[in-house]
Image (cartoon, rainbow, N blue to C red):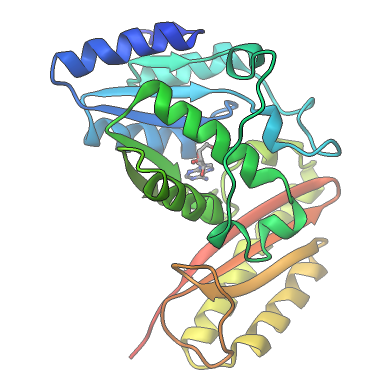
Length: 286
Ligand code: AMP
């Protein structure tokens, strides 16, 4: 088991990636904020199937956190992450300091609309996707991977990044990977570590109630009715819901309550001070 090379500077990362490209090896990038769990590792394994070389970036990106969010307390466990990535078979880890990504004078960002302005995450975290898109654009231009892997767990983020890569002609294939879950359905997330034992016990109901709503909608129940009842069950488990909505799976635009195809159910809810997000497919039946 080889430990991945750790690159702290853009110059070092570029050198490694350029060497692989010159040798004709495909390169995959998996951007993360660290505190890795099995969901992240599944992205690395998918990356290994899609490319000869895998770079994982670990960078807690300050510009995607609002001042009132968890930037300073976000878990940072780099040595442990490195062990996990060694066993998962990553070739390199890009782990820059904030000043490497945002040197003095930095003032450029990516301006977004479309899936970044549909009233879901963007409504509750108005500066979030600008921070995400800017750092992802930088990472893509730094590593110049053939393929970059993102989780469907962050469904709106995936849509924003697909759109950005297409609109800015960034020469990369964006791949969305399925969400890994705990046994009770809770989507794996670095933020689950914030939940205390009691909160954790009830947290699985977010996914269970979403699954129930998705099945009822697929079976013909009006969307608003199924969503309202599902929301009541989620609230009863101790969550404060930011949103729970069925949207167009491709554009994330709002849909009529009778729509039955191409739907995605998306939610964000807070348990105490921990904010969780999730989303699932609403199957089309008949
Ligand atoms: P993060 O470190 O939270 O920024 O996540 C890094 C990448 O891992 C993003 O593309 C996420 O969508 C993805 N990811 C996070 N949680 C999961 C999960 N439970 N299953 C699959 N991918 C995930």
